[in-house]
Length: 154
Length: 186
Image (cartoon, rainbow over all chains, first blue to last red):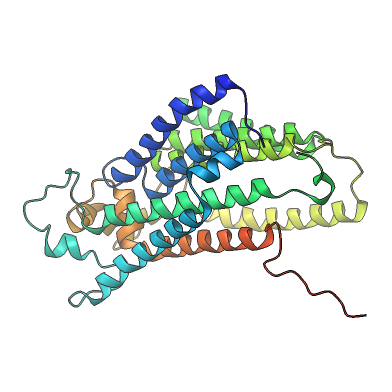
């Protein structure tokens, strides 16, 4: 995959930043507005798919190397599990107990603030990281795969 | 009344797109019809006042459609050739008829369209979520409060599914084996 023409490359070099920022917005405001970790993570992955289609596979692998992507994937999963286990072991809670909301945010943090809702924004960030990295990895694996009869093409 | 007409129109659109996607012999047309089904579903969720699901549906649909079209146009032959087997068609029609007859029995026992399933139950869990979700979790978005606080264990399962899919894709679609197979001794 060599990439596309110069017009598509120039336009997508501007558009990719907006798509990435929109994904981050969807993730961070997931506990206030519609959206959340999964949708925002898919938007982040789609900005990398735009790079992969416009510039070619090698450029996107230089942009986000595969070992770093797999480490981000694992970091998101570990962060989610760590939030769950903190809830279990902090005090006398249960699995996925919202300990920040109950212990620290019980007074002074209104419901519509950006910093509110305890562990829910943290979980959104963890899920967003995980979904973005794993969808990027899946699409990269699918795009490198060629059926046996097409091996001599490209 | 206008909403009901809109829903019937969307349902007809989705059904026609699904029929074309199954019946056409051109792979690219089938992929585009699958995209039409997804966008119809996203509109459906939007008119049913579920913007969270609508956002997720449309975003996943766009990503999957781009990848499917990319895979389809990189093939040499995009036309499906060959006839269907008679026996396989008969078996699938019979199984679909049985599922349809069972579904009619089940759908008769569901509440009407637009009524909440747990509306009649006095102390159901969903009533607690709706009435006390804001003060218990502090999240303004009730969907986030349910999927990341009350039902976070389900979300953990969903994350595990994604993790497994990555492992499966990386293992099956790997270009070269990790260790070269040994040459057979002759």
